[in-house]
Image 1 (cartoon, rainbow, N blue to C red):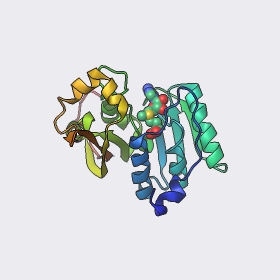
Image 2: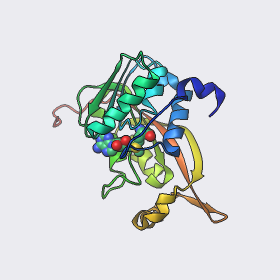
Image 3: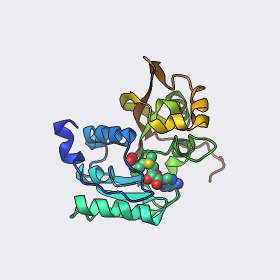
Image 4: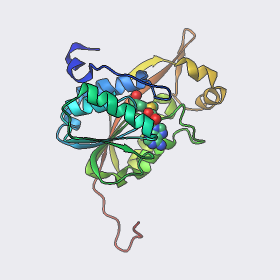
Amino acid sequence: MPNDLQPALAMDLDARDGDWRPTPHGAFLGEVLAQHGEIVAGRDVLELGGGVGNHTIPLLRLGARSVVTTEILPDRSETTRRNVERNCPDAANVEYRVADWLDTEEQFDVVFANPPFAKSGMQNRRYFIDSLILDGHKRLREGGDLLFVQSSMADLRKTRTRLKENGYAVDILGSSEGPFRDYYFEDHAFMREMRHVEDGFEIRDGIYYETLSVVRATLTTWTPAMGAHLS
Ligand SMILES: C[S@@+](CC[C@H](N)C(=O)[O-])C[C@H]1O[C@@H](n2cnc3c(N)ncnc32)[C@H](O)[C@@H]1O
């Protein structure tokens, strides 16, 4: 980890059975977050799927005004809480919620996530990314940001197109190439699907590489036409 990022990213984490242990995706998202602390400083952040708190902790250290961090199960949310309380004992501006992705209350300045993809468990593997793109606006204030990481195998071109179609200005804050995780090769359906994603991965000297990108998508102002059906 570069020295200048250590104050935000140095932490002592524990995980129990069933917890998601940080992967290169989460590590890269954390580094890009630490390099762009201005996106969260002084803002209200909703973190989806906080896991072991590896981003909740930097979000707090980088000066978020408040952080609501969610998990799908109470035990996993307890893991987030335990790690945050150990690493940021004075943080009073953090709330832990059990919630199914965007199915929670309020609006925020930033919705932050490392969305499940390879192991999303959904027929549309991109489900959690697409859900952010389609329904993120329900949790965002005007001018708010989605901030998330995705693999080239989740089809970055599709993400850009869908974000633009849904009123977001898109900025790729950083990209990083790395070798496949071992479990990709064990999931034959995943490997079959990935072969159909244009620019999804590269093979060099027999080694498979994916590219991770951190996406910032800012919700632009838009007013529906008079008489439009409103939800
Ligand atoms: C890819 S992991 C990321 C964990 C952590 N944020 C990181 O980057 O290392 C996705 C996380 O989302 C959680 N999760 C899965 N389905 C979810 C859902 N429907 N709603 C909220 N969280 C969910 C998982 O328990 C897991 O901790």
